[in-house]
Image 1 (tube, rainbow, N blue to C red):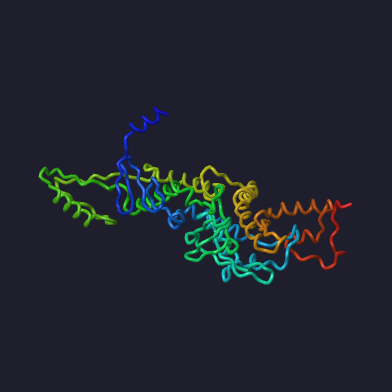
Image 2 (tube, helix red, strand yellow):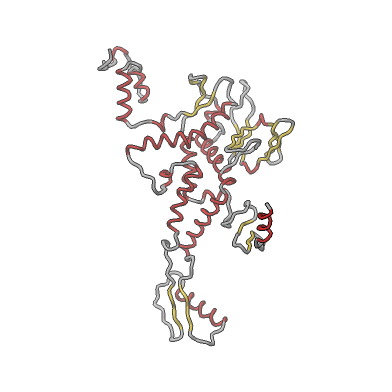
Length: 382
Protein backbone atom coordinates (compact mmCIF):
# COMPACT_ATOMS: atom_id res chain seq x y z
CA UNK A 1 0.00 0.00 0.00
CA UNK A 2 2.76 2.43 1.00
CA UNK A 3 4.66 1.62 -2.18
CA UNK A 4 1.64 2.41 -4.31
CA UNK A 5 1.13 5.71 -2.50
CA UNK A 6 4.78 6.63 -3.04
CA UNK A 7 4.54 5.74 -6.72
CA UNK A 8 1.52 7.96 -7.07
CA UNK A 9 3.25 10.79 -5.25
CA UNK A 10 6.36 10.54 -7.41
CA UNK A 11 4.47 10.12 -10.69
CA UNK A 12 4.64 13.19 -12.95
CA UNK A 13 1.44 15.21 -12.80
CA UNK A 14 -0.17 16.23 -16.08
CA UNK A 15 -0.76 19.92 -16.65
CA UNK A 16 -4.26 20.49 -18.03
CA UNK A 17 -5.11 23.34 -20.40
CA UNK A 18 -8.72 24.29 -21.07
CA UNK A 19 -10.22 26.06 -24.06
CA UNK A 20 -13.74 27.11 -24.94
CA UNK A 21 -14.75 23.71 -26.29
CA UNK A 22 -12.49 21.18 -24.60
CA UNK A 23 -9.24 20.42 -22.85
CA UNK A 24 -5.80 18.87 -23.34
CA UNK A 25 -2.98 17.94 -20.99
CA UNK A 26 0.77 17.56 -21.15
CA UNK A 27 0.44 13.76 -21.45
CA UNK A 28 -1.27 14.09 -24.84
CA UNK A 29 -4.79 13.35 -23.62
CA UNK A 30 -7.60 15.45 -25.07
CA UNK A 31 -11.35 15.71 -24.64
CA UNK A 32 -14.35 17.89 -25.31
CA UNK A 33 -16.79 19.33 -22.82
CA UNK A 34 -20.34 18.04 -22.81
CA UNK A 35 -19.66 14.56 -24.19
CA UNK A 36 -18.56 12.74 -21.05
CA UNK A 37 -14.88 12.99 -21.99
CA UNK A 38 -12.92 10.80 -24.38
CA UNK A 39 -9.29 10.50 -25.30
CA UNK A 40 -9.77 10.72 -29.07
CA UNK A 41 -11.24 14.20 -28.73
CA UNK A 42 -14.14 13.67 -31.14
CA UNK A 43 -17.64 14.82 -30.23
CA UNK A 44 -19.77 11.75 -29.52
CA UNK A 45 -23.53 12.17 -29.92
CA UNK A 46 -26.36 10.46 -31.78
CA UNK A 47 -25.64 12.16 -35.10
CA UNK A 48 -21.88 11.57 -35.08
CA UNK A 49 -22.37 7.94 -33.99
CA UNK A 50 -24.82 7.17 -36.80
CA UNK A 51 -22.47 8.99 -39.19
CA UNK A 52 -20.09 6.02 -38.98
CA UNK A 53 -21.14 3.76 -41.90
CA UNK A 54 -20.69 0.45 -40.05
CA UNK A 55 -22.75 1.62 -37.09
CA UNK A 56 -25.46 3.06 -39.33
CA UNK A 57 -25.71 -0.22 -41.23
CA UNK A 58 -25.74 -2.31 -38.07
CA UNK A 59 -28.40 -0.23 -36.30
CA UNK A 60 -30.69 -0.06 -39.33
CA UNK A 61 -30.22 -3.78 -40.09
CA UNK A 62 -31.28 -4.85 -36.59
CA UNK A 63 -34.10 -2.32 -36.24
CA UNK A 64 -35.62 -2.99 -39.66
CA UNK A 65 -35.28 -6.77 -39.29
CA UNK A 66 -37.29 -6.76 -36.05
CA UNK A 67 -39.74 -4.14 -37.34
CA UNK A 68 -40.55 -6.31 -40.34
CA UNK A 69 -41.69 -9.24 -38.17
CA UNK A 70 -45.43 -9.82 -37.63
CA UNK A 71 -46.50 -8.91 -34.07
CA UNK A 72 -49.57 -10.64 -32.62
CA UNK A 73 -51.25 -11.41 -29.32
CA UNK A 74 -51.55 -15.00 -28.10
CA UNK A 75 -53.29 -16.76 -25.26
CA UNK A 76 -51.10 -19.79 -24.64
CA UNK A 77 -50.63 -20.99 -28.25
CA UNK A 78 -53.90 -19.58 -29.60
CA UNK A 79 -53.69 -16.55 -31.88
CA UNK A 80 -55.96 -13.71 -30.72
CA UNK A 81 -58.05 -12.07 -33.43
CA UNK A 82 -58.44 -9.26 -34.09
CA UNK A 83 -54.95 -8.09 -33.11
CA UNK A 84 -55.06 -5.40 -30.36
CA UNK A 85 -54.67 -1.90 -31.79
CA UNK A 86 -51.63 -1.24 -29.61
CA UNK A 87 -49.80 -4.05 -31.48
CA UNK A 88 -51.34 -3.28 -34.85
CA UNK A 89 -50.48 0.45 -34.98
CA UNK A 90 -48.90 1.65 -31.72
CA UNK A 91 -48.38 5.27 -32.75
CA UNK A 92 -50.80 6.53 -35.41
CA UNK A 93 -50.32 7.88 -38.01
CA UNK A 94 -47.00 5.97 -38.22
CA UNK A 95 -47.09 2.45 -39.55
CA UNK A 96 -46.19 -0.33 -37.13
CA UNK A 97 -42.92 -0.94 -38.98
CA UNK A 98 -41.89 2.71 -38.58
CA UNK A 99 -42.70 2.71 -34.87
CA UNK A 100 -40.95 -0.59 -34.07
CA UNK A 101 -37.90 0.36 -36.16
CA UNK A 102 -37.56 3.63 -34.22
CA UNK A 103 -38.09 1.72 -30.97
CA UNK A 104 -35.24 -0.72 -31.65
CA UNK A 105 -32.77 1.89 -32.95
CA UNK A 106 -33.45 4.11 -29.91
CA UNK A 107 -32.85 1.15 -27.60
CA UNK A 108 -29.54 0.36 -29.28
CA UNK A 109 -28.23 3.92 -29.32
CA UNK A 110 -29.69 5.39 -26.11
CA UNK A 111 -30.58 2.29 -24.11
CA UNK A 112 -34.18 3.42 -23.54
CA UNK A 113 -37.45 3.78 -25.40
CA UNK A 114 -40.06 5.94 -23.67
CA UNK A 115 -43.63 6.75 -24.74
CA UNK A 116 -46.64 8.30 -23.04
CA UNK A 117 -49.56 5.86 -23.12
CA UNK A 118 -52.89 6.95 -24.58
CA UNK A 119 -56.15 6.90 -22.64
CA UNK A 120 -57.58 3.53 -21.64
CA UNK A 121 -60.36 2.17 -23.84
CA UNK A 122 -63.48 0.25 -22.80
CA UNK A 123 -61.40 -2.85 -22.01
CA UNK A 124 -59.23 -0.86 -19.62
CA UNK A 125 -56.11 -0.90 -21.82
CA UNK A 126 -54.59 1.80 -24.08
CA UNK A 127 -54.88 1.64 -27.86
CA UNK A 128 -51.90 3.84 -28.68
CA UNK A 129 -48.88 5.69 -27.32
CA UNK A 130 -46.85 8.81 -28.07
CA UNK A 131 -43.04 8.37 -28.16
CA UNK A 132 -40.70 10.98 -26.71
CA UNK A 133 -36.95 11.28 -27.15
CA UNK A 134 -35.02 9.82 -24.18
CA UNK A 135 -33.12 13.10 -23.74
CA UNK A 136 -36.39 14.78 -22.74
CA UNK A 137 -37.09 12.29 -19.95
CA UNK A 138 -35.96 12.14 -16.33
CA UNK A 139 -37.25 9.93 -13.51
CA UNK A 140 -37.01 9.29 -9.79
CA UNK A 141 -38.50 6.93 -7.23
CA UNK A 142 -41.16 8.44 -4.97
CA UNK A 143 -42.76 6.27 -2.27
CA UNK A 144 -41.81 3.09 -4.07
CA UNK A 145 -43.11 4.17 -7.49
CA UNK A 146 -41.28 5.68 -10.44
CA UNK A 147 -42.31 9.19 -11.39
CA UNK A 148 -41.31 10.22 -14.90
CA UNK A 149 -40.85 13.79 -16.03
CA UNK A 150 -41.15 14.62 -19.73
CA UNK A 151 -40.02 18.21 -20.18
CA UNK A 152 -42.02 19.85 -17.36
CA UNK A 153 -44.88 17.33 -17.10
CA UNK A 154 -44.88 14.51 -14.55
CA UNK A 155 -46.32 11.04 -15.20
CA UNK A 156 -46.85 8.03 -12.96
CA UNK A 157 -45.17 4.81 -14.07
CA UNK A 158 -48.60 3.43 -15.08
CA UNK A 159 -48.83 6.16 -17.74
CA UNK A 160 -45.46 5.45 -19.33
CA UNK A 161 -44.39 2.76 -21.78
CA UNK A 162 -40.68 2.24 -21.00
CA UNK A 163 -38.33 -0.38 -22.43
CA UNK A 164 -34.76 -0.33 -21.19
CA UNK A 165 -31.69 -2.05 -22.58
CA UNK A 166 -28.78 -3.23 -20.42
CA UNK A 167 -29.08 -1.87 -16.88
CA UNK A 168 -27.38 -2.40 -13.54
CA UNK A 169 -29.34 -3.35 -10.40
CA UNK A 170 -31.43 -0.41 -9.22
CA UNK A 171 -31.05 1.61 -12.42
CA UNK A 172 -34.21 3.29 -13.66
CA UNK A 173 -32.76 3.84 -17.11
CA UNK A 174 -30.92 1.47 -19.40
CA UNK A 175 -27.64 2.04 -21.20
CA UNK A 176 -26.99 1.98 -24.93
CA UNK A 177 -23.86 2.25 -27.04
CA UNK A 178 -23.71 6.04 -26.54
CA UNK A 179 -23.08 5.67 -22.83
CA UNK A 180 -21.22 2.35 -22.67
CA UNK A 181 -18.99 2.56 -25.75
CA UNK A 182 -18.04 6.26 -25.74
CA UNK A 183 -14.29 5.75 -26.03
CA UNK A 184 -14.56 3.28 -28.88
CA UNK A 185 -17.17 5.44 -30.64
CA UNK A 186 -14.85 8.41 -30.33
CA UNK A 187 -12.02 6.59 -32.08
CA UNK A 188 -14.33 5.50 -34.90
CA UNK A 189 -15.67 9.03 -35.34
CA UNK A 190 -12.13 10.43 -35.24
CA UNK A 191 -11.10 7.93 -37.91
CA UNK A 192 -14.07 8.98 -40.03
CA UNK A 193 -13.02 12.64 -39.72
CA UNK A 194 -9.40 11.72 -40.47
CA UNK A 195 -10.43 9.86 -43.63
CA UNK A 196 -12.54 12.79 -44.80
CA UNK A 197 -9.64 15.21 -44.32
CA UNK A 198 -7.29 12.76 -46.02
CA UNK A 199 -9.28 12.87 -49.24
CA UNK A 200 -9.93 16.60 -48.96
CA UNK A 201 -6.50 18.17 -48.47
CA UNK A 202 -4.51 15.28 -47.04
CA UNK A 203 -3.42 14.88 -43.45
CA UNK A 204 0.22 15.80 -44.13
CA UNK A 205 1.61 18.65 -46.24
CA UNK A 206 1.84 17.81 -49.93
CA UNK A 207 5.36 19.14 -50.12
CA UNK A 208 8.02 21.53 -48.84
CA UNK A 209 9.18 24.74 -50.51
CA UNK A 210 12.90 25.15 -49.88
CA UNK A 211 14.80 28.38 -50.38
CA UNK A 212 18.57 28.63 -50.36
CA UNK A 213 18.36 32.39 -49.83
CA UNK A 214 20.03 32.97 -46.42
CA UNK A 215 18.34 36.39 -46.07
CA UNK A 216 14.77 35.04 -46.40
CA UNK A 217 12.64 36.32 -43.51
CA UNK A 218 9.28 35.11 -42.20
CA UNK A 219 7.23 37.64 -44.14
CA UNK A 220 8.94 36.72 -47.41
CA UNK A 221 8.45 33.01 -46.67
CA UNK A 222 4.74 33.58 -46.16
CA UNK A 223 4.50 35.50 -49.42
CA UNK A 224 6.35 32.71 -51.26
CA UNK A 225 3.94 30.11 -49.89
CA UNK A 226 0.88 32.22 -50.71
CA UNK A 227 2.11 32.78 -54.26
CA UNK A 228 2.72 29.04 -54.71
CA UNK A 229 -0.73 28.10 -53.38
CA UNK A 230 -2.43 30.71 -55.54
CA UNK A 231 -0.77 29.35 -58.68
CA UNK A 232 -0.47 25.63 -58.03
CA UNK A 233 -2.89 24.96 -55.14
CA UNK A 234 -5.88 22.61 -55.15
CA UNK A 235 -6.44 20.89 -58.50
CA UNK A 236 -4.06 22.89 -60.65
CA UNK A 237 -1.83 20.73 -62.83
CA UNK A 238 0.22 23.52 -64.40
CA UNK A 239 3.98 22.93 -64.57
CA UNK A 240 5.96 24.79 -61.93
CA UNK A 241 8.71 27.27 -62.87
CA UNK A 242 11.25 27.95 -60.10
CA UNK A 243 14.35 30.09 -59.83
CA UNK A 244 17.75 28.77 -58.82
CA UNK A 245 17.27 29.49 -55.11
CA UNK A 246 13.89 27.74 -54.74
CA UNK A 247 13.16 24.02 -54.67
CA UNK A 248 9.91 22.07 -54.18
CA UNK A 249 10.21 18.69 -52.48
CA UNK A 250 7.19 16.35 -52.68
CA UNK A 251 6.22 14.56 -49.46
CA UNK A 252 4.77 11.15 -50.29
CA UNK A 253 1.76 9.95 -48.34
CA UNK A 254 -0.59 7.06 -48.94
CA UNK A 255 -3.44 5.42 -47.10
CA UNK A 256 -1.58 2.12 -46.77
CA UNK A 257 1.42 3.69 -45.01
CA UNK A 258 -0.81 5.66 -42.63
CA UNK A 259 -2.70 2.41 -41.81
CA UNK A 260 -5.94 4.14 -42.73
CA UNK A 261 -7.28 1.10 -44.58
CA UNK A 262 -6.35 -1.35 -41.81
CA UNK A 263 -7.90 0.86 -39.14
CA UNK A 264 -11.17 1.25 -41.01
CA UNK A 265 -11.29 -2.52 -41.61
CA UNK A 266 -10.67 -3.25 -37.92
CA UNK A 267 -13.49 -0.92 -36.91
CA UNK A 268 -15.96 -3.02 -38.93
CA UNK A 269 -15.34 -5.87 -36.49
CA UNK A 270 -15.51 -3.51 -33.53
CA UNK A 271 -18.84 -2.07 -34.68
CA UNK A 272 -20.24 -5.59 -35.13
CA UNK A 273 -19.14 -6.49 -31.58
CA UNK A 274 -20.78 -3.36 -30.17
CA UNK A 275 -24.13 -4.26 -31.70
CA UNK A 276 -23.90 -8.02 -31.19
CA UNK A 277 -23.93 -8.70 -34.92
CA UNK A 278 -22.05 -11.45 -36.76
CA UNK A 279 -19.20 -9.62 -38.51
CA UNK A 280 -20.23 -10.92 -41.94
CA UNK A 281 -23.28 -8.65 -41.95
CA UNK A 282 -21.03 -5.56 -41.83
CA UNK A 283 -18.40 -6.88 -44.21
CA UNK A 284 -15.83 -7.49 -41.48
CA UNK A 285 -12.70 -9.46 -42.52
CA UNK A 286 -12.13 -13.14 -41.74
CA UNK A 287 -15.83 -13.89 -42.10
CA UNK A 288 -16.57 -16.42 -44.81
CA UNK A 289 -20.03 -16.99 -46.23
CA UNK A 290 -21.13 -19.92 -48.36
CA UNK A 291 -24.50 -21.13 -49.56
CA UNK A 292 -24.42 -24.03 -47.09
CA UNK A 293 -24.05 -21.89 -43.97
CA UNK A 294 -26.34 -18.94 -44.77
CA UNK A 295 -29.29 -20.61 -43.04
CA UNK A 296 -27.18 -21.25 -39.93
CA UNK A 297 -25.99 -17.63 -39.96
CA UNK A 298 -29.58 -16.42 -40.09
CA UNK A 299 -30.39 -18.71 -37.15
CA UNK A 300 -27.48 -17.25 -35.16
CA UNK A 301 -28.60 -13.71 -36.07
CA UNK A 302 -32.09 -14.42 -34.77
CA UNK A 303 -30.98 -16.30 -31.68
CA UNK A 304 -28.23 -14.02 -30.37
CA UNK A 305 -28.96 -10.59 -31.89
CA UNK A 306 -32.64 -10.11 -32.74
CA UNK A 307 -34.43 -12.33 -30.21
CA UNK A 308 -32.98 -10.74 -27.02
CA UNK A 309 -34.13 -7.29 -28.15
CA UNK A 310 -37.47 -8.60 -29.41
CA UNK A 311 -38.07 -10.33 -26.05
CA UNK A 312 -37.73 -7.01 -24.19
CA UNK A 313 -40.27 -5.42 -26.53
CA UNK A 314 -42.68 -8.36 -26.27
CA UNK A 315 -42.70 -8.37 -22.49
CA UNK A 316 -43.33 -4.63 -22.26
CA UNK A 317 -46.18 -4.77 -24.79
CA UNK A 318 -47.66 -7.73 -22.88
CA UNK A 319 -48.17 -5.47 -19.84
CA UNK A 320 -50.60 -3.29 -21.82
CA UNK A 321 -52.88 -5.86 -23.46
CA UNK A 322 -55.63 -7.84 -21.67
CA UNK A 323 -54.52 -10.14 -18.87
CA UNK A 324 -53.66 -13.64 -19.99
CA UNK A 325 -52.50 -12.47 -23.43
CA UNK A 326 -48.87 -12.11 -24.47
CA UNK A 327 -47.34 -10.23 -27.38
CA UNK A 328 -45.09 -12.26 -29.67
CA UNK A 329 -43.08 -11.62 -32.81
CA UNK A 330 -43.24 -14.29 -35.49
CA UNK A 331 -39.73 -15.20 -36.69
CA UNK A 332 -40.85 -17.81 -39.22
CA UNK A 333 -40.13 -15.54 -42.19
CA UNK A 334 -36.48 -15.04 -41.15
CA UNK A 335 -36.00 -18.73 -40.38
CA UNK A 336 -37.72 -19.92 -43.56
CA UNK A 337 -35.55 -22.50 -45.29
CA UNK A 338 -34.92 -22.70 -49.02
CA UNK A 339 -37.57 -24.34 -51.24
CA UNK A 340 -35.87 -27.75 -51.56
CA UNK A 341 -35.28 -28.07 -47.80
CA UNK A 342 -38.89 -27.10 -47.01
CA UNK A 343 -40.33 -29.59 -49.49
CA UNK A 344 -38.16 -32.37 -48.11
CA UNK A 345 -39.38 -31.57 -44.57
CA UNK A 346 -43.00 -31.53 -45.79
CA UNK A 347 -42.51 -34.94 -47.40
CA UNK A 348 -41.24 -36.39 -44.12
CA UNK A 349 -44.18 -34.87 -42.23
CA UNK A 350 -46.70 -36.27 -44.70
CA UNK A 351 -45.13 -39.72 -44.84
CA UNK A 352 -45.17 -39.98 -41.06
CA UNK A 353 -48.74 -38.74 -40.83
CA UNK A 354 -48.28 -35.84 -38.41
CA UNK A 355 -49.27 -33.19 -41.00
CA UNK A 356 -52.03 -33.11 -43.60
CA UNK A 357 -51.75 -31.77 -47.12
CA UNK A 358 -53.82 -28.73 -46.17
CA UNK A 359 -51.50 -28.00 -43.24
CA UNK A 360 -48.53 -28.18 -45.59
CA UNK A 361 -50.31 -25.88 -48.03
CA UNK A 362 -50.93 -23.43 -45.19
CA UNK A 363 -47.18 -23.35 -44.44
CA UNK A 364 -46.60 -22.51 -48.10
CA UNK A 365 -49.24 -19.74 -48.02
CA UNK A 366 -51.61 -21.66 -50.31
CA UNK A 367 -55.36 -22.06 -49.96
CA UNK A 368 -56.67 -25.42 -48.70
CA UNK A 369 -58.07 -27.90 -51.18
CA UNK A 370 -61.79 -27.48 -51.74
CA UNK A 371 -62.55 -31.17 -51.39
CA UNK A 372 -60.55 -33.19 -48.82
CA UNK A 373 -61.12 -36.29 -50.97
CA UNK A 374 -59.09 -34.65 -53.70
CA UNK A 375 -55.98 -34.70 -51.53
CA UNK A 376 -53.23 -36.64 -53.31
CA UNK A 377 -52.12 -39.98 -51.97
CA UNK A 378 -48.82 -39.72 -50.13
CA UNK A 379 -46.45 -42.60 -50.83
CA UNK A 380 -45.21 -44.16 -47.61
CA UNK A 381 -48.29 -43.42 -45.49
CA UNK A 382 -49.71 -46.65 -44.01
